Length: 82
Image 1 (cartoon, rainbow, N blue to C red):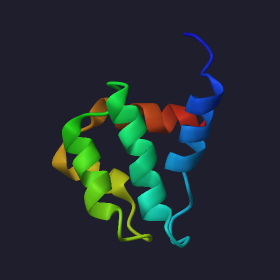
Image 2: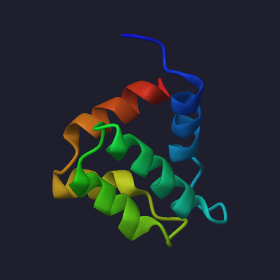
Image 3: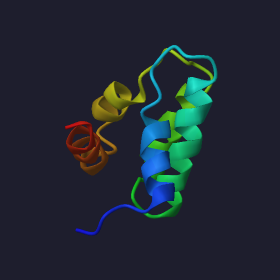
Image 4: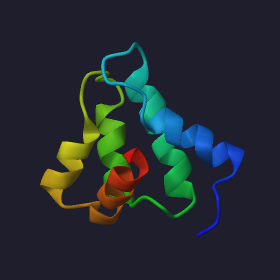
């Protein structure tokens, strides 16, 4: 696996913006759109980020898990946090 470029590294940081910070939901959604456009996030999972975009304290990952729409994404998020 190749090392991520600077843009991808920045987008990982943005998608992991802490819950509850002002505008954090929109920040996570914008980063999710980046990964969607790269083909790394499903449209269904992106929709969850969109729904959570105005809810800064809402974690989209449990909703993605509940809906069963992004299992590969959930694995990537777990690996990325390690």
